[in-house]
Picture 1 (cartoon, one colour):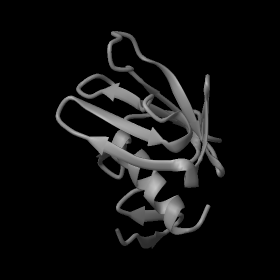
Picture 2 (cartoon, one colour; picture 1 turned 60 degrees about the horizontal axis):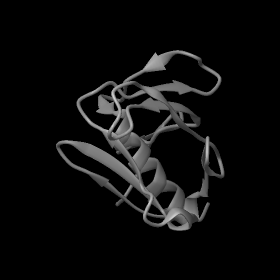
Picture 3 (cartoon, helix red, strand yellow; picture 1 turned 180 degrees about the horizontal axis):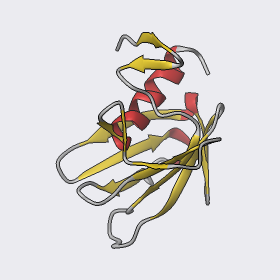
Length: 119
């Protein structure tokens, strides 16, 4: 995937910046903080995965998933169709989209962007 720099720190396709992500885990009904995006990777309760340790991601009509190497068999899978929000670091405003794209897509773009940059 090729990322074009648009200026002011924006890229296309859009990438999620550092911040806290809230979603509904598969099998649950309530939204919780699932992880934080940091310069080093994804950090959260029971999960710490550098960008290079994420081996894949998946997005379909029902769910989205991040697959970290160090948690094989325990991918992080979340429900689609229910609110996924992000609190961008330093901003503290809630957002459900970045440049018109839903947060899960922007998180997956961030993973690919970080891998390409060797983070």
